[in-house]
Every structure is written in C-alpha cells, then in structure tokens.
Length: 202
Image (cartoon, rainbow, N blue to C red; front, side):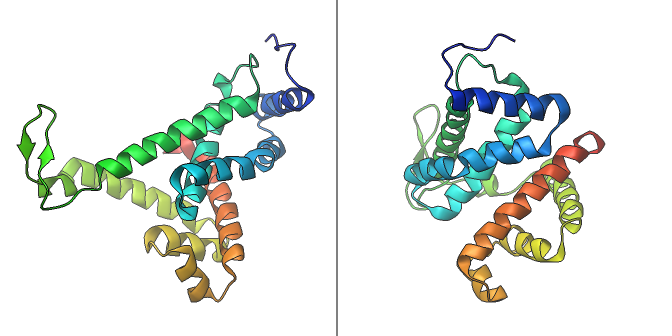
C-alpha cells in the first residue's frame, strides 16, 4: 500500500506499528500504539463528557474499536487522526444515548410522529430473546473474567458486575484510587486480548 509522502516521522512510525499488529499480530505493537495515545485520547474524551469514569471507559472502547478495525486504516493520513475520529464519534454516540435515556417520569415525551406520549415502562424490560442473549453474553464474560489473575478479577467484578464506583472500589480494597484505575485499565486490556483471541469460538 502506498504511504502518503507528507506523513511525519511520528506518523510513519505509527504505520509501521499498525503493519506489525496486522501482519503478525504483534502484541507489543498494539501496546505501544495504546501507550502513545492513551493519555491524549483520555483528555479529549474527558473534555467531551466531563466525567472521569466515563472518559476511562470510553478510552478503552475507542482503542477496542480501533484495534478491531485496524485493517481498515489506510496511510493516506496519520493513524492519530483516524484514532481520534473513532474516539470522538464513539463519544458522541455515548452522549446521544445518555441524553435519550435521561428524562423525567412526569414530563411527556414527543414521539417520532411529533405527538406527546407518557413514559412506557415496558422499554426497561427485555423480551425473552433479548434476555437470553444478555444472559449468554454475561456467562461468556464471566468465563473470560475467570481467566484473569485474582486481583484483576476482583476489580472487574466490583466495577462491572456490582457496579461500584472507583472510589467505592478503593475503599473496599483499601487501595489508592490511582492504583485502582491503573489496574482496571490493565485488566480491561487483558480482557480485550482474551475476547479477541476467543472471538471465533463464541
């Protein structure tokens, strides 16, 4: 593939890492790409959502999406440009969904046709097929979580199954909040790699 001659040295180095990740599945290349842009992506998202927990989760999602679609990246422009676009688009979707799900019970909502309607509680319930899919996904996720080291497993269970905040986890495990965030970040990297390697088996 022809590389844009206007790319900077940094962008050319990124492209070499992308090729190593795609061509031979080089885990170090994935890790280096992540470490090069993790902080800048996080601060971009933090400005957009103004919530540290959400920015943390969205950072992981952005890298997850980028790595799953790495084969679609073309060196017409810098990898960082492509990555930032994925991160910001994903974040905009997240903000839209959050706004959509935030409404007052008493306030009538406007339907797609423009007529007013009261809140339909049924929307919070899943039909049997959706429940089954959700249950299967939960079982798969729990199986994957079981493969983590005990300290990471505990963190993931508290954060995602019991829905503890970072502060609550820090108190529960008697750890500094910075350690909790760093270890959760690492745990999610492990989870992503396990899921990526078992995709064909699910």
